[in-house]
Length: 343
Image (spheres, rainbow, N blue to C red):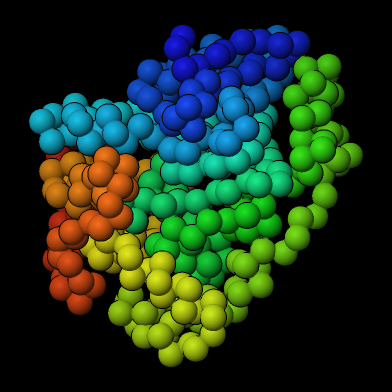
């Protein structure tokens, strides 16, 4: 299959995202190929575990193919929605997979790349790993089960990283629950051949994993928790503005460039997810936002500014946080009738 290599090596089912020039961005056919492989291997006794990796040095997977969504979404929103329907079902399949699902998260693992890695049983980062959920910056919200992962992070920290789109290094990813282990670059390449040779992943990690240098998330967790100890995002922003530290001022810059409707929608979604008991519920909530985003303007405008024209100057609607009403947020999560995501 183009852009995806699926093979069995030893007793390991190996999935290689093979689109390095596009930072291994996920197309619909790639999602289908991953799903088909996981189904085939689930009851195959010759496959003891699954390994997913990305080709090239720069990225595991930098997200979904949003340029295709930009081109097709306005003229066929229902058709484009099927990309997410299949993607989210795959995310849930990975989260519930009965065999070890091992993700080698080198380089960029962003957005959709998080969806095919961070729900696995063994998520491994290395030097230069950059994990992020940057969706709010393109008029979207942290999806692919991102709201579930973020709400399980330490208090306030998940909300900050989800809304700001701030990048996580190796320690940050482990601290937030997006990764399990750090393996230095010099040993990272030994994981796959040792698995193929028949070694157990837990034994391998016990041998070569190390403690990474402390990241911003762990260092600033108390400040972030204090900022987000609020009933609404306006209060969060006021808390950050009152903090004169350099870290707070950097946080403000990140938050102010995000899409206002997405900011408040994400804050709302993370509150909702606190009452959930499964990743599937989170995916269903995110799916509603997807559906309504495809019929709006912000998502397309965010993609235009970031990927198409690259002017980094999106024109959001509404333009300011203070103009986003509760009704606007509620409408982004309105029921979809017969189009709801069903597992």
